[in-house]
Image 1 (tube, rainbow, N blue to C red):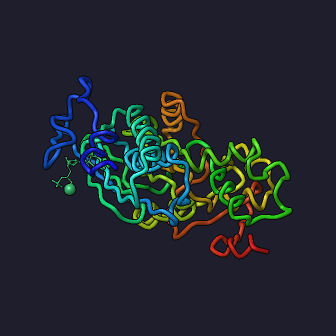
Image 2 (image 1 turned 180 degrees about the vertical axis):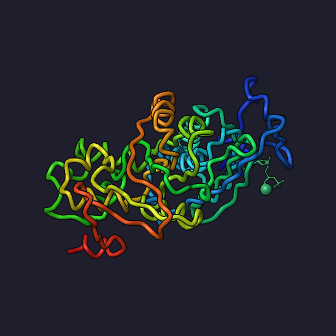
Image 3 (image 1 turned 90 degrees about the horizontal axis):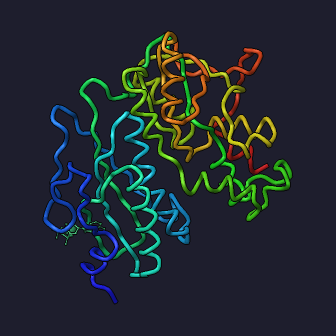
Length: 331
Ligand code: ADP
Ligand code: MG
């Protein structure tokens, strides 16, 4: 059986990387030491993932390692911050080396993609619980805050929405005959949707490309309507959303309009960016999307009103009972 310290050194300690000049001291001392670029602000965020609540206890460990870091990097993306480093607090029920090797493999592979180094943490025995804190940097005044949306802004979303929620619905058997038959557990189509749920892509390059262009941004973890609602509340503005212009994921696109609308609006686990930008910066937003190789779609506009109004393709008001959707699904 590995000791706590053997475990840390085998799975979570790596030789210093010569290209990461901002890490003055990594895993192994009482604190790590970070050197942010002179004049920059630190952006810091923590996300905890609890077995049975945020992921299935038997989740595939490589994908789980990826996802734990991805959801944290997504918060940096939503501020337009550049990732620097992260810490990992881990409660493990037991030491399973195969599990640890796969988990740290998925975690560190994504870390390397974003040059975001694991610099410390804490390891303890307990119910499986994974808590990551990420550190990034932004230029003063450039971070994409939730409270910065302005009347007249366009509302945009990156990538596509809803495929992760669709995969969850299949796992939970929430939808019966309404679903296309080829979405059975384990089918190729299902596996594509499930990949969105298990291995989300943090939109780091897009977030940085939008600095100086976008006003407000948030990453969509709990569903577009709820998360956009945070921007509206913090900015003191209202909005109209063109529901049928929302970019549904490729698998969700093949489902009925009712499922498409609900899962694009109130899905969850999308980890796309929802952001606002002045209408006169449309070309700049599209160029930022291209530079970041990430699709961006205009989905509505901010106004001086109150709350969120939904419209269909003919600009007619839509009154969808999103909060009771689970009830709707169980019929
Ligand atoms: P302390 O007793 O000072 O809290 P620990 O014994 O908990 O230190 O940890 C020893 C070193 O290993 C520290 O540098 C800590 O940051 C690091 N560490 C502990 N757990 C992890 C982990 N899961 N991932 C990365 N580093 C870790
Ligand atoms: Mg400790």
